[in-house]
Structure formats: C-alpha cells, structure tokens
Image (cartoon, rainbow over all chains, first blue to last red; front, side):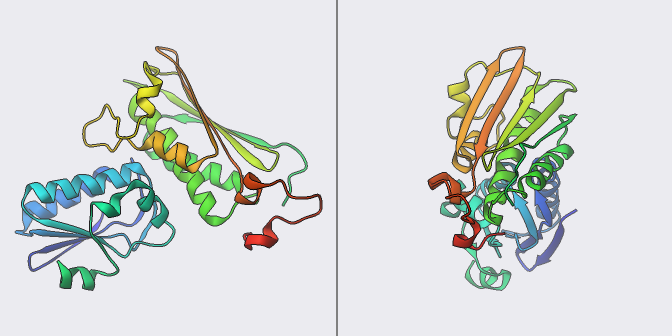
Length: 110
Length: 159
C-alpha cells in the first residue's frame, strides 16, 4: 500500500521499500485510484523511502508519466535517494521525467 | 575478506514475483564476503532482479521453477539464473534495448544486466529453457589483479 496524499490539483504518491515486479502493480493501482477519485492534474512521486528499484519499477514510473501526458497533466519524481540514482541515470529516465530535490520544490515549479 | 576456498550457493524457488526479492537479496548476502563496494552490491542486486524477473514474466505459462546459483571465483562472483520454460527463439532480438513482448514494459532487463555486470552469456533452447550467466568483479579487480598481500580495499575504502 502506497502513501497517497491529495493537495489541491496535485496527487503525491510515496512508495516505500523495494520497487520491483512484485510491488509495481500496487503502485500502478494506487496511482490510478488516486487520479480517479480526485481531480488531480499533477502527479508527484516521492522516491525518498524507496530502497531498491529495477526496470520493473522504472517501467511503472514511465507508464504513469505516459498516462499523465495522455490526460493532459504533468508528472515529476522527487527526493531520489543516492543508492537508487545510478539505476535511474542508466535508464535515461531523468531525460523524460522531470526530477526535483523535494516535494516542496516540485509543488513550486510544476 | 579473501575467500581461500571456492564457495557456492544454490536457490531453487517457484518463479513467482514475490521470490524475485528473495533471489537478489540472497545473492547480495553471498557476494558481501567479496570486496564489493555498496554501489556494486546494488548493481549486482539489479542484475539478479532483472534475470529472475525475466523468468517470472516470460518463462512459463503455468507454474515453474527458477534456479539461482552463484559461485565465488578468483575474487569475483559468477551468477547463473536458469529456468526450464519456453526458451527464447531469438536471443539477439531479446537482448536489444527496448525490445519487449509485454506492452508497457521498458525492455531494459538485458540492457541492465549487460551494463551492470562484467560478462553476460545467454543460452536458450525453445521448449527447453533458458540459462543466463554473468560475472561481476569488484572494481579493484576488474582493472588489475592486486599484488599478493595488498589489500584492494585500501584504495577505495570500501568494506
């Protein structure tokens, strides 16, 4: 279960622990639920408490990004921990999804 | 610590998504006796995760098993992930970046395995199964073999 918060037009989702083929479906579901039950046009995903990510987790992030673009909205990732940063860099995800240092920064800039 | 005796491990589990974490954490714990840095152990975990995830997603239509073997050899780790599933008809195609048979996935599994390990080998036979083998060496070793008595950890400070 992911921590989901709704602030004005923004949905903030905070996945925790390991983000892989086992946990990615729950993340997708929680984001879809959050978007369906609010009028949020912006999605902020905080990776602060994510301890591990592989291509399945990255795919889930990219999938939500595509979904937001389809809906005419925006998405950002924030608070990327140092230990998972190399994998995000290797995947090229930073070239696609905007990243900010904190939720506060994202809320200001988006 | 240097391992004087060649050591190895084997894990045989059902190819289920919840077992992917078990496989990567077990291999990481096994590898921690070598001179890997923390980021290198993370890389190893991602590589194992990709290999086992491929089995979970692609190898079987029904239930099946995945076997993970690892061996410490010359200060490096050799990992083998094997299944007895459908096999891969076109290995070269499967290893291409962005190639995937499942919509919505990134097709980065093999790309990550190649980028994060020192050597990757994929053996597959249709209807028989697939074996993915890779080797990963601590950075202090992949460039040069340390002299006898020299502690490779003294350079990068890794434990």
